[in-house]
Image (cartoon, rainbow, N blue to C red; front, side, top):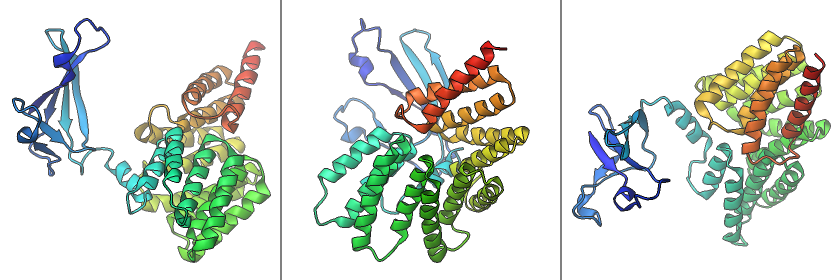
Length: 367
């Protein structure tokens, strides 16, 4: 057991009511198999203090928080968790599996996108461009591809398409391997889906699928992602039986490779839920939305954009069942999430949500 006092406590202005002292009491425990910490008293600037340094990324579980009897500081009891036993182990491993083998600033950008921190990812990509050598055509292609993914996530589909097409042009100059092109075609397809350019989207998706089938085969994760996107596309063109086949193919593959809490499995649940909603099988649709929401609650930050989409979908379901008060409550939750995210006002989900809120309020007023 070790106690650590926030160093600012010793020098804080007692008259500043906005500052509160915190004492961390950390239980290291005897069952931890790794030791991600070190005693650094001899190397510290403060020679009269005993100091311990924990490795960045150490995981602690909050055991208790309470105001100390003296009322001068808060006592927070933490427990160091073994990296092989905490409940987010599978989630961390899955994130690692989707990152590049070599950790670099491009990998950091991808992680920021995954975390819904689009503005930070965009700024970092812009910094990478400033430091890029003119001769490094491949890196320029990766950065354009990454920026395209940022704007796809933010809902600026025209700019996303422009940047992704630049990436394709650069990759075609320097690559013999067509896998990077497949990634770009997949992103283009996702943009065209959201722009309701279905035939163009289908061409891009099939380009990607053909490359993946040639290089990876049927049971590869990249192939599964394309099946998932093809499912989304066929939902949009109202071919629900085909959509269900694509989504279930994707789900079957993801379940072989990932734990039950992976975000791709949540995405499959979402699309299958939408299909059953469109087929007016509302109870079945709701069961898939709830499965999706359970995964999101375990794995996503509280205000992640995908929560808003889930709440929007559930609201649409209740609206279709003429349960307008319930629908409006979920629309309100979605609206709160979207307002806290980096979505543009022109984002398709934002526009759709505002339309549903307006029509639902009108329906309630006429009841």
